[in-house]
Image (cartoon, rainbow, N blue to C red; front, top):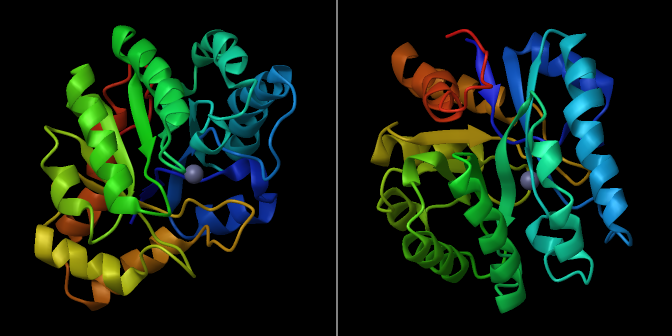
Length: 266
Ligand SMILES: [Zn+2]
């Protein structure tokens, strides 16, 4: 089974992880821009990071047979940082990189007005430039944060088929699926968020339309093999090959393939 992991921060992972992912069927990873564990002190540090994940990472991934795409953003956790606006000002030229499919992850962390401003600015640019948008939903107060995010999407009139709302749970999936044609992401984590059994239960209840799943692996407790492990469980639980392929491959193709930069063969 060929797999796309549509949210993973390879910047914080080792080369062994690329090898293990490739050996377990992961043919493509999507790397959204994120918080590095320490608030950046200079806008230029954001720009160097954007340069790193649009140059070094795709080259590194290719050595292990893994296709690598990115989304760029000033992430929700740093949206309240005093340099956030300046960092966004200098971001656009990096979005032109051949492996960058759009803007993300943007969204709410503490669900504040400052976060909403930075998110809206980036989403507005993406909408005007026909770019895809990848939205993070908050770890705390997730239903409230998701609800407010959806209100922003509706008020801005974003093209929902170009929007992915990520880190859904059983608490948010109804409202996310109801938001036009958005694609809904789920993150499988070893400690918080969804586990493989919970993910399989969601897919049994809601079916496979517009749903994708990812590892969101980073420098914290996380597992770059979370998607292949969930695929193993889906086989055990009697999902068909077509259903599994739809979630880990076809739905990703349908969403990311809206970008003219997407070159992954079907
Ligand atoms: Zn992330």
